[in-house]
Length: 138
Image 1 (tube, one colour):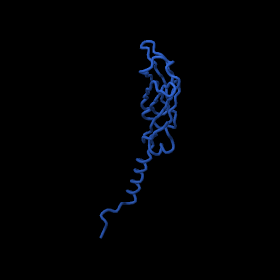
Image 2 (cartoon, rainbow, N blue to C red):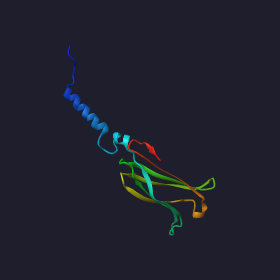
Image 3 (spheres, one colour):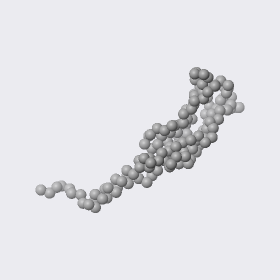
Image 4 (tube, rainbow, N blue to C red):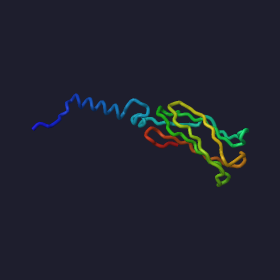
């Protein structure tokens, strides 16, 4: 009795090449690329806190850049807490979106509770981002 389907050497080679191409790929966000490289985001300017003269709000402005090894950085965010001692007087977050390799962006947002730079004594901040496989970085 003959087997229903016996793959030839040529078809096996073709499937092997196709599977390698799909898995490893040439794209900077492919699984193979992410194995050896990762996105890395840094703050290149700021964060600067200042009083908006028009609305009299305390604003924060920052510029970030994806200066990693090539992969895209997704869902880049910057969370800031302003504290007076151990009490959090205000908090906000900047969302920068997605940056490809060497791209940068500047964003500004305001704090809603404080009206003066003297209302806080310390600032805590976390810059975070994800890669194409949803791995979290700080």
